[in-house]
Image (cartoon, rainbow, N blue to C red; front, side, top):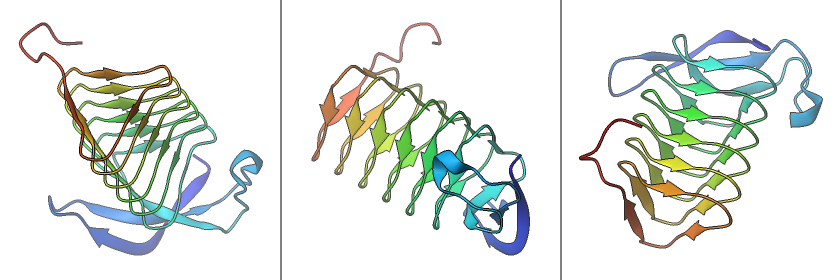
Length: 158
């Protein structure tokens, strides 16, 4: 871990205490210097590699944010979600459940990605769009505005 937990806390609606993080190492690829404050991370969540959580973003529960991923703004990553590679989750977006956002994918605005959904490659999900269940959004695809993409949840687990 390249950060420590500070004494600044918040309580999530589920009752989890999350802590503002502070860098204990420089992360040049993220522009983070020792002493910079980040967002809020729960003690069960993992933020590793050169990943960073900025601003008032929250990473809670059993989530993993790793590689060169970034979570910022007021975004929230929760449940068993994974954000990795060079992925970005920002604005007021939420990624939760067992969803994965990876590659150079971006989820932002008020977008939701949840369930077993996967967003990867150079895909973007933004605006008030949501991607759920076992849906896959990849390549250079863009899901925006009020679009809804849902996959088949009746089959085997991913």
